[in-house]
Image 1 (cartoon, rainbow over the protein chains, first blue to last red):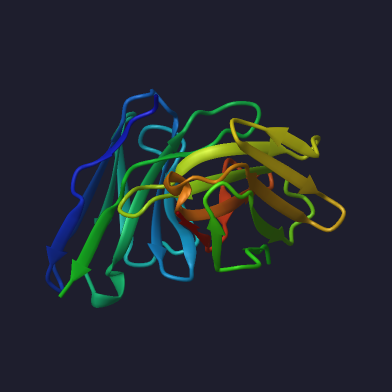
Image 2: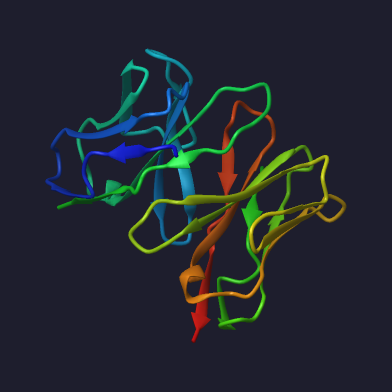
Length: 114
Length: 112
């Protein structure tokens, strides 16, 4: 089974702090994704990566950056946390194939910015 | 723009009954669809997928139906069990590099 592990289940930070969310997958997947999930809004794509050191903006990249130094690890960075970034953050991975493949998710990090 | 939506935000069913969860999509170019289940405190879990060259696909106790004419997707759960209680949402992809658009979800409550 695919295992996507997010380093923290709950995190509380203060406004203005630099915040790092870590994600590791063990299935040698090429693609990795960061989403945020808010009530009534569904999952919204922040950033994704299709290879090491590659990154692409998703639908809501403002205030975030990412890092993919190793294939199995994809980090989300909040450069200067704000209260509007309080949310559930979900990491996902998928394999690259000629046809679309499902994304596999971690259990999320619930981030609160005070 | 693209949109994926659900007709019912909450669905309550009796244990043992069949459940049907619906999803509408607006992008006629979408060619791959997934249903996810998300239990409280957990990440979304893949249930079943279907490609646009199919109308129906069956799994264990679950069936997904795709009607491309009206751009509608449904998930049928047979003999619903308490463990099926969760939020279910659909996702669509239009071939753009494995980028999916997700619905906001339907909460399924199974009454014993």
